[in-house]
Picture 1 (cartoon, rainbow, N blue to C red):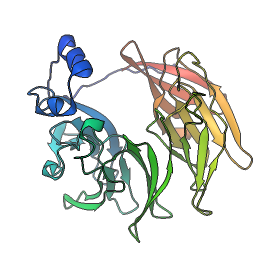
Picture 2: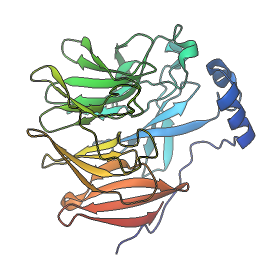
Picture 3: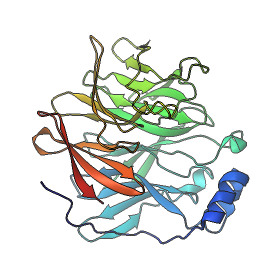
Length: 332
């Protein structure tokens, strides 16, 4: 059976943070303290999303960086990093591009800014910015701040209908942005959900978890139908394979395959197939004992690949749709 044979690391920057410092800041420090700290505010970076561009062969990288330098390109052939000079002077609190890089049919990149700052700066923070980036010209076009003060955790791009969907933080909301008309609409509150991910099916329907009664600790699915402009709160949960961990049956990653099947990975690490009309939820398995199933992509012959982390070791997995089997390809 094939296994991961070779891994190359291409570091952007070295940054050592002691356990003591991390613990102290996460428990005691306010948002402004993080931004102004010499190490956390100026040296600490963390890649948060990737987008491969088939035309120029570059990998576009959304970063967490408290200094606002949140957008890079990596050249796999030259092994080089390039900052794309996101204009950090626009917003002191825009500190990452979280799950928000999408490629349109013209080769342009849509993105959105998220934040690490919390509600202590909410009255001052302008809010997450939707933007469009033209790779050939290296130019940004700023489209909208969909919800004032709130930042954008993730976006989906419906190429056919020219719609961008997004979810926000610290207020958990779902919004719709129509590219042609530039119209913004807040579709619904989501409640105190953990997930920052959405899924889109082959009919353009958008799936998300929502909180159903705060005392029940349930996070069932909703589906927004753009053709009817309607949200169905389905009151149906994804399989809960780690009931001891509240909220672990929420969406953690999603994949729409070329033949129109929709798969999601859950926070608990399960792979699930979603169907509607009629609603059908098929749990295909939990390949690892650890939580999280991330980075779902479709490979050759319809195979599905994804990632799971076990004790700080990232495993690459492969799923055979025809035989319903998982294969651990090894540690990255």
